[in-house]
Image 1 (tube, one colour):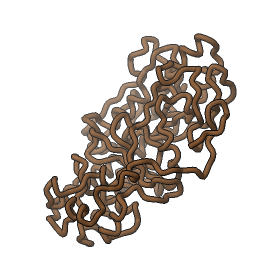
Image 2 (tube, helix red, strand yellow; image 1 turned 60 degrees about the horizontal axis):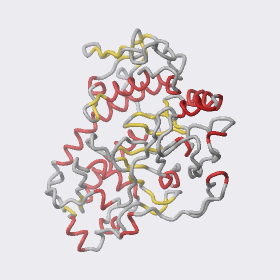
Image 3 (cartoon, rainbow, N blue to C red; image 1 turned 60 degrees about the vertical axis):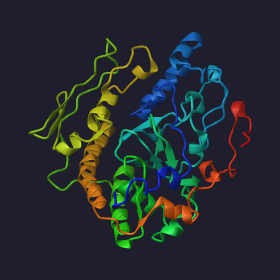
Image 4 (cartoon, one colour; image 1 turned 180 degrees about the vertical axis):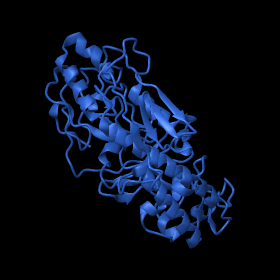
Length: 392
Protein backbone atom coordinates (compact mmCIF):
# COMPACT_ATOMS: atom_id res chain seq x y z
CA UNK A 1 0.00 0.00 0.00
CA UNK A 2 1.13 3.54 -0.75
CA UNK A 3 3.97 2.20 -2.86
CA UNK A 4 6.20 0.88 -0.05
CA UNK A 5 7.14 -2.73 0.49
CA UNK A 6 5.77 -4.61 3.51
CA UNK A 7 9.14 -4.49 5.29
CA UNK A 8 9.23 -0.69 5.09
CA UNK A 9 5.92 0.04 6.85
CA UNK A 10 5.86 -0.05 10.66
CA UNK A 11 3.37 -2.30 12.46
CA UNK A 12 0.39 -0.77 14.25
CA UNK A 13 1.60 -2.62 17.36
CA UNK A 14 4.60 -0.25 17.49
CA UNK A 15 2.72 2.91 16.53
CA UNK A 16 0.00 2.33 19.18
CA UNK A 17 2.09 0.43 21.75
CA UNK A 18 -0.39 -0.20 24.58
CA UNK A 19 -2.85 -2.98 23.92
CA UNK A 20 -5.03 -5.20 26.06
CA UNK A 21 -6.32 -8.72 25.49
CA UNK A 22 -10.06 -8.88 24.79
CA UNK A 23 -12.38 -9.15 27.80
CA UNK A 24 -13.78 -12.63 28.44
CA UNK A 25 -17.33 -12.88 29.77
CA UNK A 26 -17.37 -16.55 30.73
CA UNK A 27 -21.19 -16.59 30.47
CA UNK A 28 -23.37 -14.88 27.88
CA UNK A 29 -26.56 -14.09 29.76
CA UNK A 30 -25.22 -10.72 31.14
CA UNK A 31 -25.06 -9.57 27.48
CA UNK A 32 -28.18 -8.91 25.40
CA UNK A 33 -29.46 -6.67 22.59
CA UNK A 34 -32.17 -5.28 24.91
CA UNK A 35 -31.43 -3.65 28.30
CA UNK A 36 -34.84 -4.46 29.81
CA UNK A 37 -34.17 -8.17 29.29
CA UNK A 38 -30.96 -7.90 31.34
CA UNK A 39 -32.92 -6.50 34.27
CA UNK A 40 -35.38 -9.40 33.98
CA UNK A 41 -32.49 -11.89 33.93
CA UNK A 42 -30.92 -10.27 37.00
CA UNK A 43 -34.26 -10.36 38.83
CA UNK A 44 -34.62 -14.06 38.03
CA UNK A 45 -31.10 -14.73 39.36
CA UNK A 46 -31.73 -12.82 42.60
CA UNK A 47 -35.10 -14.53 43.11
CA UNK A 48 -33.48 -17.96 42.94
CA UNK A 49 -31.85 -19.51 45.99
CA UNK A 50 -29.27 -22.18 46.72
CA UNK A 51 -28.50 -24.63 43.92
CA UNK A 52 -31.04 -22.94 41.62
CA UNK A 53 -29.16 -19.64 41.79
CA UNK A 54 -25.87 -21.40 41.20
CA UNK A 55 -27.22 -23.21 38.12
CA UNK A 56 -28.65 -20.01 36.67
CA UNK A 57 -25.38 -18.16 37.27
CA UNK A 58 -23.34 -20.72 35.25
CA UNK A 59 -20.16 -20.81 37.39
CA UNK A 60 -16.68 -21.17 35.93
CA UNK A 61 -13.23 -21.56 37.47
CA UNK A 62 -12.86 -17.76 37.39
CA UNK A 63 -16.30 -16.84 38.78
CA UNK A 64 -18.71 -18.52 41.19
CA UNK A 65 -21.37 -17.15 43.51
CA UNK A 66 -18.67 -16.98 46.21
CA UNK A 67 -16.02 -15.07 44.23
CA UNK A 68 -14.94 -11.78 45.82
CA UNK A 69 -13.86 -9.05 43.37
CA UNK A 70 -13.73 -5.27 43.29
CA UNK A 71 -15.96 -2.93 41.31
CA UNK A 72 -15.37 -2.26 37.67
CA UNK A 73 -13.71 1.19 37.51
CA UNK A 74 -16.30 3.90 37.05
CA UNK A 75 -19.23 1.57 37.81
CA UNK A 76 -21.38 1.21 40.92
CA UNK A 77 -22.27 -2.49 41.02
CA UNK A 78 -21.98 -4.20 44.38
CA UNK A 79 -18.89 -6.02 45.59
CA UNK A 80 -20.50 -8.47 48.03
CA UNK A 81 -20.53 -12.11 47.09
CA UNK A 82 -23.35 -12.98 44.68
CA UNK A 83 -24.53 -15.81 46.90
CA UNK A 84 -25.93 -13.06 49.19
CA UNK A 85 -26.80 -10.47 46.50
CA UNK A 86 -30.12 -8.64 46.59
CA UNK A 87 -31.45 -5.46 45.09
CA UNK A 88 -31.85 -4.06 41.58
CA UNK A 89 -29.76 -4.80 38.52
CA UNK A 90 -26.75 -2.55 37.91
CA UNK A 91 -27.64 -0.17 35.08
CA UNK A 92 -26.74 -1.85 31.75
CA UNK A 93 -24.21 -0.11 29.51
CA UNK A 94 -23.98 -0.04 25.73
CA UNK A 95 -21.10 -2.14 24.35
CA UNK A 96 -19.78 -3.33 21.00
CA UNK A 97 -20.36 -7.08 21.22
CA UNK A 98 -19.04 -7.85 17.72
CA UNK A 99 -18.21 -5.84 14.59
CA UNK A 100 -21.29 -3.71 13.83
CA UNK A 101 -23.30 -5.29 16.68
CA UNK A 102 -24.11 -2.95 19.56
CA UNK A 103 -25.66 -4.64 22.58
CA UNK A 104 -26.02 -4.09 26.35
CA UNK A 105 -24.01 -5.49 29.26
CA UNK A 106 -24.55 -5.69 33.01
CA UNK A 107 -21.33 -3.96 34.17
CA UNK A 108 -20.76 -6.11 37.24
CA UNK A 109 -17.27 -7.49 37.84
CA UNK A 110 -18.75 -10.51 39.63
CA UNK A 111 -20.39 -11.65 36.38
CA UNK A 112 -17.35 -11.35 34.08
CA UNK A 113 -14.46 -13.81 34.09
CA UNK A 114 -11.85 -11.38 32.71
CA UNK A 115 -13.22 -7.83 32.59
CA UNK A 116 -9.89 -6.01 31.88
CA UNK A 117 -10.28 -3.20 34.48
CA UNK A 118 -7.47 -1.25 32.78
CA UNK A 119 -9.81 -0.71 29.81
CA UNK A 120 -12.73 0.37 32.01
CA UNK A 121 -10.49 2.99 33.68
CA UNK A 122 -9.99 4.82 30.39
CA UNK A 123 -13.49 4.28 28.97
CA UNK A 124 -15.20 7.65 28.72
CA UNK A 125 -16.79 10.00 26.19
CA UNK A 126 -13.35 10.99 24.81
CA UNK A 127 -12.05 7.47 24.23
CA UNK A 128 -11.88 5.57 20.96
CA UNK A 129 -11.05 1.87 21.11
CA UNK A 130 -9.30 0.31 18.15
CA UNK A 131 -10.18 -3.38 17.92
CA UNK A 132 -7.96 -5.57 15.80
CA UNK A 133 -9.77 -8.48 14.24
CA UNK A 134 -8.09 -11.30 12.35
CA UNK A 135 -11.32 -11.68 10.36
CA UNK A 136 -11.77 -8.03 9.29
CA UNK A 137 -9.98 -6.19 6.45
CA UNK A 138 -9.37 -3.25 8.78
CA UNK A 139 -9.63 -2.60 12.53
CA UNK A 140 -12.91 -1.58 14.11
CA UNK A 141 -13.03 1.75 15.93
CA UNK A 142 -15.68 2.37 18.55
CA UNK A 143 -16.60 4.79 21.31
CA UNK A 144 -18.32 1.94 23.17
CA UNK A 145 -16.65 -0.55 25.46
CA UNK A 146 -15.51 -3.39 23.16
CA UNK A 147 -16.08 -7.11 23.68
CA UNK A 148 -14.29 -8.77 20.76
CA UNK A 149 -13.97 -12.54 20.66
CA UNK A 150 -10.37 -12.27 19.41
CA UNK A 151 -7.71 -9.67 18.61
CA UNK A 152 -6.15 -6.93 20.71
CA UNK A 153 -7.83 -3.75 21.95
CA UNK A 154 -5.82 -0.52 21.55
CA UNK A 155 -7.26 2.57 23.30
CA UNK A 156 -6.44 5.82 21.53
CA UNK A 157 -5.80 7.50 24.87
CA UNK A 158 -3.94 6.14 27.89
CA UNK A 159 -5.82 8.27 30.44
CA UNK A 160 -9.41 9.47 30.92
CA UNK A 161 -10.38 12.79 29.41
CA UNK A 162 -8.68 12.15 26.08
CA UNK A 163 -5.19 12.77 27.47
CA UNK A 164 -1.84 11.10 26.75
CA UNK A 165 -2.30 9.54 23.32
CA UNK A 166 -1.45 5.88 23.00
CA UNK A 167 1.09 6.63 20.27
CA UNK A 168 4.83 6.08 20.05
CA UNK A 169 6.38 9.15 21.73
CA UNK A 170 7.46 11.71 19.14
CA UNK A 171 5.54 10.07 16.29
CA UNK A 172 3.20 12.94 15.45
CA UNK A 173 6.01 15.51 15.66
CA UNK A 174 8.17 13.41 13.36
CA UNK A 175 5.42 13.08 10.74
CA UNK A 176 4.75 16.82 10.93
CA UNK A 177 1.16 16.73 9.68
CA UNK A 178 -1.27 17.06 12.59
CA UNK A 179 -1.02 17.04 16.36
CA UNK A 180 -4.53 15.57 16.68
CA UNK A 181 -4.45 11.84 17.58
CA UNK A 182 -7.84 11.40 15.90
CA UNK A 183 -6.29 12.47 12.59
CA UNK A 184 -3.64 9.80 12.99
CA UNK A 185 -6.30 7.21 13.79
CA UNK A 186 -8.19 8.29 10.67
CA UNK A 187 -5.03 7.70 8.61
CA UNK A 188 -4.67 4.24 10.17
CA UNK A 189 -8.23 3.29 9.20
CA UNK A 190 -7.61 4.47 5.65
CA UNK A 191 -4.18 2.93 5.13
CA UNK A 192 -3.66 -0.07 7.42
CA UNK A 193 -2.93 -3.36 5.68
CA UNK A 194 -4.40 -6.77 6.53
CA UNK A 195 -0.99 -7.76 7.96
CA UNK A 196 -1.25 -4.96 10.54
CA UNK A 197 1.39 -2.65 9.05
CA UNK A 198 0.62 1.03 8.47
CA UNK A 199 2.29 2.84 5.55
CA UNK A 200 3.18 6.43 6.45
CA UNK A 201 3.92 9.43 4.24
CA UNK A 202 5.37 12.93 4.43
CA UNK A 203 3.30 14.08 1.45
CA UNK A 204 0.76 16.57 2.89
CA UNK A 205 -1.65 16.12 -0.01
CA UNK A 206 -1.68 12.34 0.27
CA UNK A 207 -1.96 12.60 4.04
CA UNK A 208 -4.96 14.94 3.77
CA UNK A 209 -6.77 12.62 1.37
CA UNK A 210 -6.14 9.63 3.61
CA UNK A 211 -7.24 11.46 6.76
CA UNK A 212 -10.43 12.68 5.07
CA UNK A 213 -11.26 9.15 3.98
CA UNK A 214 -10.39 7.74 7.40
CA UNK A 215 -12.61 10.24 9.19
CA UNK A 216 -15.47 9.08 6.98
CA UNK A 217 -14.80 5.48 8.04
CA UNK A 218 -14.42 6.56 11.67
CA UNK A 219 -17.76 8.39 11.59
CA UNK A 220 -19.54 5.36 10.18
CA UNK A 221 -17.95 3.01 12.70
CA UNK A 222 -18.52 5.17 15.78
CA UNK A 223 -21.97 6.54 14.90
CA UNK A 224 -21.78 9.06 17.74
CA UNK A 225 -22.54 12.21 15.78
CA UNK A 226 -25.00 13.04 13.03
CA UNK A 227 -26.79 9.86 12.00
CA UNK A 228 -25.79 8.47 8.57
CA UNK A 229 -28.35 8.55 5.76
CA UNK A 230 -28.54 7.12 2.29
CA UNK A 231 -29.72 9.39 -0.56
CA UNK A 232 -33.45 9.92 -0.90
CA UNK A 233 -35.16 6.99 -2.57
CA UNK A 234 -32.47 4.59 -1.31
CA UNK A 235 -33.25 4.79 2.38
CA UNK A 236 -34.52 1.52 3.88
CA UNK A 237 -38.01 1.43 5.38
CA UNK A 238 -40.22 -1.17 7.01
CA UNK A 239 -42.73 -2.15 4.31
CA UNK A 240 -44.49 -4.81 6.40
CA UNK A 241 -44.36 -4.95 10.22
CA UNK A 242 -41.72 -7.20 11.72
CA UNK A 243 -43.29 -10.18 13.50
CA UNK A 244 -43.60 -10.81 17.21
CA UNK A 245 -40.72 -12.61 18.91
CA UNK A 246 -41.61 -15.43 21.34
CA UNK A 247 -39.66 -15.63 24.57
CA UNK A 248 -38.53 -19.21 24.00
CA UNK A 249 -38.82 -22.17 21.67
CA UNK A 250 -39.84 -25.61 22.90
CA UNK A 251 -36.96 -27.48 21.31
CA UNK A 252 -34.34 -24.93 22.33
CA UNK A 253 -32.64 -25.06 18.94
CA UNK A 254 -34.82 -23.87 16.07
CA UNK A 255 -34.42 -20.17 15.21
CA UNK A 256 -37.38 -18.13 16.39
CA UNK A 257 -37.66 -16.25 13.09
CA UNK A 258 -36.43 -16.93 9.55
CA UNK A 259 -34.45 -14.50 7.44
CA UNK A 260 -34.41 -14.29 3.63
CA UNK A 261 -33.05 -11.76 1.13
CA UNK A 262 -34.56 -11.10 -2.30
CA UNK A 263 -31.77 -9.69 -4.40
CA UNK A 264 -33.96 -8.65 -7.33
CA UNK A 265 -36.40 -6.73 -5.14
CA UNK A 266 -33.67 -5.64 -2.69
CA UNK A 267 -35.91 -6.76 0.14
CA UNK A 268 -35.06 -8.30 3.49
CA UNK A 269 -37.76 -10.73 4.73
CA UNK A 270 -37.94 -11.54 8.42
CA UNK A 271 -40.82 -14.01 8.55
CA UNK A 272 -43.74 -11.85 7.37
CA UNK A 273 -41.88 -8.59 7.94
CA UNK A 274 -40.26 -6.77 5.03
CA UNK A 275 -37.54 -4.10 4.88
CA UNK A 276 -36.55 -2.42 1.61
CA UNK A 277 -34.63 -1.19 -0.21
CA UNK A 278 -31.67 -3.12 1.16
CA UNK A 279 -28.77 -2.61 -1.28
CA UNK A 280 -26.96 -5.82 -2.29
CA UNK A 281 -23.65 -4.37 -1.05
CA UNK A 282 -25.18 -4.06 2.44
CA UNK A 283 -26.48 -7.63 2.37
CA UNK A 284 -23.16 -8.95 1.03
CA UNK A 285 -21.00 -7.09 3.59
CA UNK A 286 -19.01 -9.76 5.41
CA UNK A 287 -16.65 -9.99 8.35
CA UNK A 288 -14.78 -13.26 8.70
CA UNK A 289 -16.76 -14.84 5.87
CA UNK A 290 -20.09 -14.21 7.63
CA UNK A 291 -22.70 -11.72 6.40
CA UNK A 292 -23.02 -9.00 9.03
CA UNK A 293 -26.80 -8.64 8.60
CA UNK A 294 -27.35 -12.39 8.88
CA UNK A 295 -25.26 -12.56 12.04
CA UNK A 296 -26.95 -9.50 13.55
CA UNK A 297 -30.40 -11.01 13.04
CA UNK A 298 -29.27 -14.47 14.16
CA UNK A 299 -28.10 -13.13 17.53
CA UNK A 300 -31.56 -11.65 18.10
CA UNK A 301 -33.60 -14.61 16.89
CA UNK A 302 -31.58 -17.70 17.86
CA UNK A 303 -33.32 -19.91 20.40
CA UNK A 304 -31.74 -20.42 23.81
CA UNK A 305 -31.77 -23.46 26.06
CA UNK A 306 -35.00 -23.47 28.07
CA UNK A 307 -34.60 -22.82 31.77
CA UNK A 308 -31.49 -20.67 31.39
CA UNK A 309 -31.25 -16.93 31.94
CA UNK A 310 -30.39 -16.52 28.25
CA UNK A 311 -33.86 -17.87 27.43
CA UNK A 312 -35.38 -14.74 28.97
CA UNK A 313 -35.86 -12.47 25.97
CA UNK A 314 -38.24 -9.77 24.70
CA UNK A 315 -41.89 -10.75 24.38
CA UNK A 316 -41.99 -9.00 20.98
CA UNK A 317 -39.55 -7.51 18.50
CA UNK A 318 -38.60 -4.15 20.14
CA UNK A 319 -39.03 -0.97 18.12
CA UNK A 320 -35.45 -0.07 19.01
CA UNK A 321 -34.23 -3.14 17.09
CA UNK A 322 -36.03 -1.94 13.98
CA UNK A 323 -34.32 1.45 14.21
CA UNK A 324 -30.95 -0.23 14.75
CA UNK A 325 -31.50 -2.57 11.80
CA UNK A 326 -32.33 0.32 9.45
CA UNK A 327 -29.23 2.21 10.59
CA UNK A 328 -27.03 -0.87 10.24
CA UNK A 329 -28.21 -1.35 6.65
CA UNK A 330 -27.36 2.29 5.97
CA UNK A 331 -23.90 2.04 7.55
CA UNK A 332 -22.98 -1.13 5.67
CA UNK A 333 -24.11 0.35 2.35
CA UNK A 334 -22.10 3.53 2.91
CA UNK A 335 -19.04 1.60 4.09
CA UNK A 336 -19.22 -0.62 1.01
CA UNK A 337 -18.93 2.55 -1.07
CA UNK A 338 -15.94 3.77 0.94
CA UNK A 339 -13.84 0.60 0.90
CA UNK A 340 -12.90 0.80 -2.81
CA UNK A 341 -11.50 4.27 -2.13
CA UNK A 342 -9.07 2.68 0.32
CA UNK A 343 -7.78 0.70 -2.65
CA UNK A 344 -7.44 3.88 -4.69
CA UNK A 345 -5.32 5.34 -1.90
CA UNK A 346 -3.04 2.35 -2.21
CA UNK A 347 -2.45 3.18 -5.87
CA UNK A 348 -1.29 6.72 -5.10
CA UNK A 349 2.39 5.75 -5.51
CA UNK A 350 5.54 5.92 -3.33
CA UNK A 351 5.19 9.57 -2.35
CA UNK A 352 7.64 10.47 0.43
CA UNK A 353 7.20 7.29 2.50
CA UNK A 354 8.18 7.24 6.17
CA UNK A 355 9.66 3.81 6.83
CA UNK A 356 10.41 1.78 9.91
CA UNK A 357 14.09 2.55 9.38
CA UNK A 358 13.32 6.30 9.33
CA UNK A 359 11.44 6.03 12.62
CA UNK A 360 14.24 4.03 14.22
CA UNK A 361 16.83 6.54 13.10
CA UNK A 362 14.73 9.35 14.58
CA UNK A 363 14.41 7.49 17.90
CA UNK A 364 10.62 7.12 17.59
CA UNK A 365 10.89 3.34 17.34
CA UNK A 366 11.10 1.11 19.17
CA UNK A 367 8.66 2.67 21.65
CA UNK A 368 9.82 2.69 25.29
CA UNK A 369 8.74 -0.29 27.38
CA UNK A 370 6.61 1.92 29.65
CA UNK A 371 4.42 2.89 26.69
CA UNK A 372 3.30 -0.74 26.38
CA UNK A 373 1.98 -0.77 29.95
CA UNK A 374 -1.15 0.92 31.34
CA UNK A 375 -0.75 4.38 32.81
CA UNK A 376 -1.18 4.78 36.58
CA UNK A 377 -4.57 6.36 37.21
CA UNK A 378 -4.95 7.42 40.82
CA UNK A 379 -7.48 10.27 40.62
CA UNK A 380 -10.49 8.25 41.79
CA UNK A 381 -11.15 5.58 44.41
CA UNK A 382 -12.30 2.11 43.48
CA UNK A 383 -14.22 -0.17 45.81
CA UNK A 384 -12.56 -3.51 46.43
CA UNK A 385 -14.11 -6.86 47.40
CA UNK A 386 -16.76 -6.70 50.14
CA UNK A 387 -16.70 -2.90 50.13
CA UNK A 388 -13.00 -2.46 50.88
CA UNK A 389 -11.01 0.42 49.36
CA UNK A 390 -9.04 -0.89 46.40
CA UNK A 391 -5.34 -0.11 46.22
CA UNK A 392 -4.13 0.52 42.64
